[in-house]
Image (cartoon, rainbow, N blue to C red; front, side):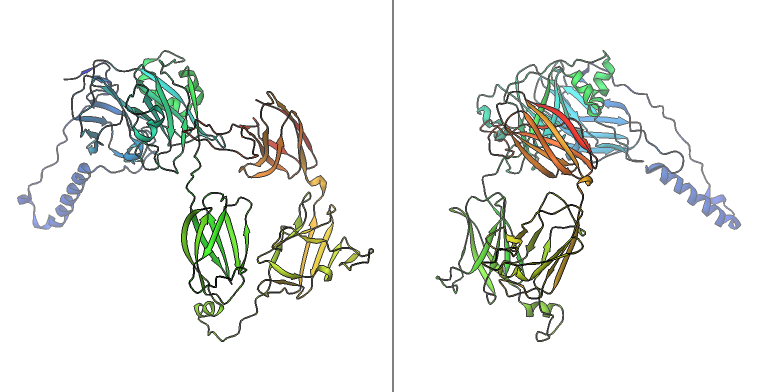
Length: 626
């Protein structure tokens, strides 16, 4: 037996019988057979429409969600001992993504079956419920009407197998530790602290939680109808949907301290709101949540660094270049040729370049006669993979295009590019040249450039002649792929560079055509400047202060170790963000957390307002950081 502590609210449906008109087929006259056939078909079509719910057409658009008119047993029932729950609505409904949307807390030993019958949702329980336990069925946005798919947002059905309903609650929000953005569709897990069989630190790895909630679009969560006991709380982006922290790519958040549920503190005493509308209201109004919950718990979500290094990808480029990409920055990336026919003493067979973040290696093979390489790739002593690199030959490429191998192609030319965009060059940065392949022979003594309108300067260097100008392009790297113009660019000045034919050669013998590069530098008045007066209240830790665009791309960075003024200069007009990272482990980068070591991610702060920079304008702001 069960008894109800609350009555379901809603209107009572009134039904009546509708008699269908009868037709005596035997009395139909022959001349009316065609007319009466249409009549019978119309009746049949109308009866079929009555038996099959469809979306209505015409009239104003239906925007109202379904309403619960009855549930069996009633919502908030006590001493529940049934195997089936039925919830009836005022219109035909369907279930949308029930496995993702519907959350049952505490989780059941076996998943129930959800069925539709008429205007009712039927829940068949496949395992006995625990005694003296309050269960909540949170439907999210799974219940929608069939007409316009209007969702009944966050409907909550509650029952108890005991003689009372647990009534305490916990609320808060889950945000990204890195950018403070709300995290949607994240599970929030509660564990009682009285588990004597599993160490407390191992709970999220080995034990399913006693209570589960899911965050909404604004990252807000609420756990209701809780027992009065202490808990540990976690947030989990559950990749494999098993309520366990058991995948390296799963994100987690945790609090170090034990928390206690409390009674809801409503701004207004309205039991109807508490019982039926609270879930929907707080999902939309974060201020309401903070008022409703005396303790409001912020959970900072992060992904741990997976210590298992992997080779993610290998990409091959003509004529004999390949790129190895690792999952994480490699401490000591290595690769070894294991071709049997590869000479043991053939050590100087390539050039290589490791990128700044040390998570990729570009390799240029010197011998163009090599068809393939079999490589063993490692990071330190850990062998990651064995791969086969197959190079595409020029004749093979012609065959793919339907051409004969001996047909002569246009000779390949050396390609390079500068960092001026759309013939415009930003101030505050040098002009750079980047080549696809390393250069082995370059002569800038024949390169000419025009600065302004009237000055033609031959750029060259002859040893012992001090009056001549030295070559302005100097290499930035040992491979000779990146060159920088070693002069300061003047504002609003035209620059033109002429590279004569065959003045540059790369490692594959490719050389350039005559190339001209021109650009116009901008004016200082095209930019604005931002000056920040920083107050580091404790001065205990340094800060990484970053200027970001609205998509959070890092534009400029300052490292600050004490209170004082910093400046971001030559900023293009637009809207910007300023972000500060408390460098707790002083390594000039943001560090994520690690659960088992009780290591929270480094704290992140954003300047409270978006900053609009105008051309030829200075902006001054003050900012206090803890």
